[in-house]
Length: 118
Image (cartoon, rainbow, N blue to C red):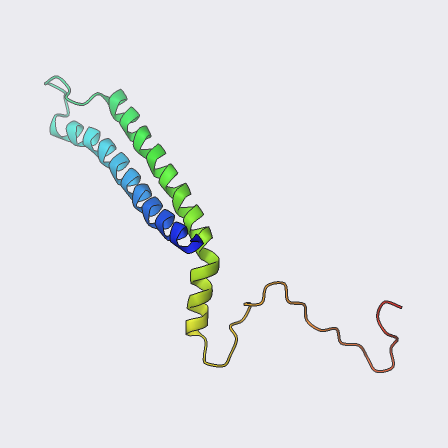
């Protein structure tokens, strides 16, 4: 369940973030395109700069929401998919490095030292 939700959030969030960035840049580019087509503004402007700014801000907010969704999805996927990939890429019979979370190395005491905790 966690893997499915993580995959859906990652895919949708990434797509939404890319869409938001592209559409914001396109709305700003349309303002510059109009300036290049009619530099002296002899005709009435088709695109108002305040409307372009509001549209770009709306798309940027949409992109930020998508980026947050993508990050949450990738965090949910982090344990499952990355561990599976590490397991598949490691040689047979060898445990991947760092796969045991919280593992404590054994204490090495010199011979003849008193037991720990006494």
